Length: 308
Image (cartoon, rainbow, N blue to C red; front, side, top):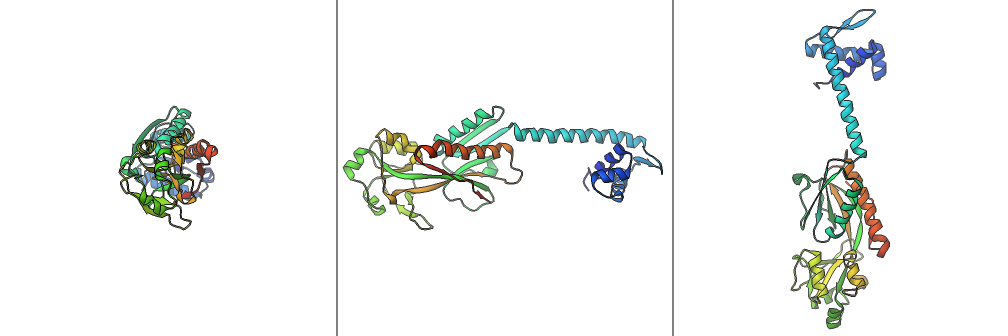
């Protein structure tokens, strides 16, 4: 039996001086209130109220118990008020995990911008090349890319961005540009250890192409540096290479077959009673991505769909 059971009814009876009035204010029957108070007295093995046909009075035990319960009720109300305040004024710690391959460059900027708006909030940012265990690591949120595996986690789709093939002007001049995915076999492809690139095929599933090359890295900055030096072809996000393309250090392949749209997700452990810090950060992140990336080169398309 819940330890607080019957106490709300007891407090309301004392405050109003009437079982009938207490029942009306609580939205229950008089018999229910009377039963709850009787059960409370049985549980405490003490009489709390003296009942007569005209008046209700507290016993000595009832007086002591009433004062203590009234204090606890006030403290509970203060606790509720504190939680409500936190929902508006963010406090505590927001612990995030972001992918090191491409995410740090723009996600870190988004986190910093959000932190500036909420100076009372402590922020912990952890980056790695592999997906973290949200529950075991105690993370509030992580950012993931591509298709998500089925899980008990909650994911909100923030949008999509484009991956394009690029290389230095000197590399394209020397080796020519591929005209199909099959032509990539003739090129030095810079990429991660799995050695697969995905391309939009127009079908439900993307086209998966096996590539090879003499430069392997999980880090986007390392791949871009190698591409700038003319070592080979890289597949990198448009937003990531934009400045290098504008500076003439890299040249994008503009063929329709050479693009791949990848989804970006905010992933968190729980959807019910989502904390204000997570809810507001996810909303902020969706807006930040749309504002910072989409207007400039249509590199990022926002999406607010929810996956449960």
